[in-house]
Length: 459
Image (spheres, rainbow, N blue to C red):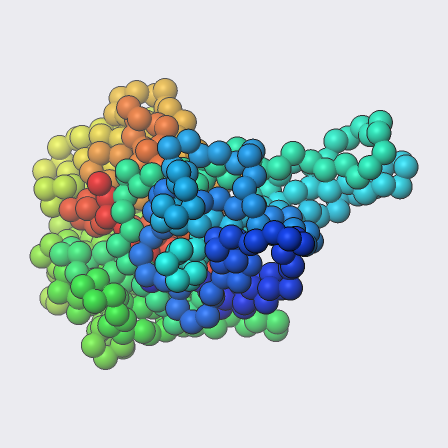
């Protein structure tokens, strides 16, 4: 069930082939776990489920002929198996070294890097592989002979493994398989959480031509694709109706409505700008942008409510909320009644701002991080996730009383003004690029840079 992209499968097949050439030391027996690390089965679909503790961690240097063995420096207290036979997951950690320069003596300096393959002991099949655990650069000053090697990423790896296995925040539910490997630009749940819509941004070819953008609708009961379409433009605004029959996308400031059954556009809404797009539980469509917010009766092609605001959301009770600019910043109000729920500092490029669904908090964020504000409080709090490498914030989505953040290391977490340090969990994703939270707050959709989409149950 877990994801391994095509290039990763090929890499792992090559990895397994190469590992088979390593010989056991003379007179010594190679453990069953070491053999599995030597020759992980990475053919066809990865194993269903999610890796669980306790774990048996084995280590190996890329060019060494020695067998996989325990590394005393890697210790995850409370998660390691008492004996190899009691392990529910084998974690195969391999270190490679990249030459990053030479000293005045001519001797090379190396930066270590780790990759990990997680294997099910019962049959040797792979859950997934994770790369990108990069150690430190080699020492800058060299006094003794021999190659200089930087500090290995032991702490980062242990932190990641604990986040991966201690799933106290969310539980993996399913992998959704898109037919395309393009980066997702938006995800959207239907109001009844039965379907999920995905739009991806295709990569340009060698001639600079950008293919049409893939649009996919998934059935969350079966995990199967309902329909796969293509739009001749890029968009980052997407919504799917509760009935699952309509898909709304932003096209150059206007809104196109797609018939999911036929995969065609059957109407267009004349709007000036679009930064927010979402269907309500009654299949009314909220559209906001350029300080104009409207609720549309799509079937009747008419506006039923309007007001000022560039961002719209639905409260947990299903009330339309709008975030609008003021002389001093932003306010969040109920669209119909005008009742104010929160006031916040201003926000300008390169930052993006989004309110929580209760209207009492706002997140201002960029790739460098996020700041969470509480209504009426100009002093924000920096939101952070556990560091397992270079920390870059890739996406954010509102919950009823906070936000979900996702970073470039595949770490996701829940944050709020009162808890800016994320309650985090590690995924098997390369880099999270899109996030959606279901209206009832129970499901989380994550999309990564390779076009993989996963559904998680929030606890």
